[in-house]
Amino acid sequence: MTTPSPESASTLDAALAAAVADSDKTETLQAAVQALAGHDLVLPQTAAPDNEAPAEGQITLPVIEQDQTSFVPAFTTAERLTDNLPDVSGSIVIGALELAAAWPSEDLWLAINPGDAETALALPGAAVRALAAVGGGPTSV
Image 1 (cartoon, rainbow, N blue to C red):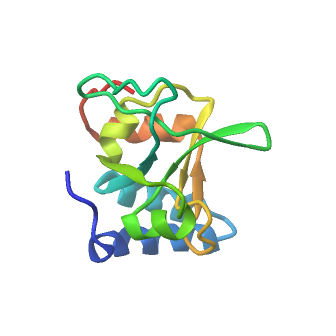
Image 2: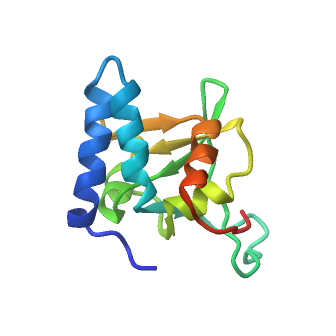
Image 3: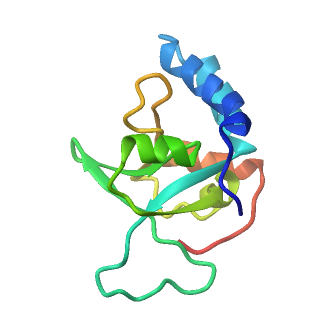
């Protein structure tokens, strides 16, 4: 999979920005989730502590903790990842539907573009899993 270009992510970023700006959020949040369904996301990756490579078809979800909530950070472009997490040296690109189909827990949230005031949006695990209903195949995470 190739890295999403800023041009291909512009529709998704616009939908995310609308959801962030909307105080009601219900309609714009649904539009953002629909826009997310057709896009790839960039996930930061770091070497596992034991330096063991993940099994074929398996990815490691990076998890950050904030206010006793666990989030997986994901970005709409590699540039957004670099702007917000400059110390991360590795990343993978995964389709949002593929990620949703393999989402491990409703207790785990998806943080899209964390650190970007205009487009940062957090989705609860139940919403991420509901995204998988749009389509996508199984993958191990």
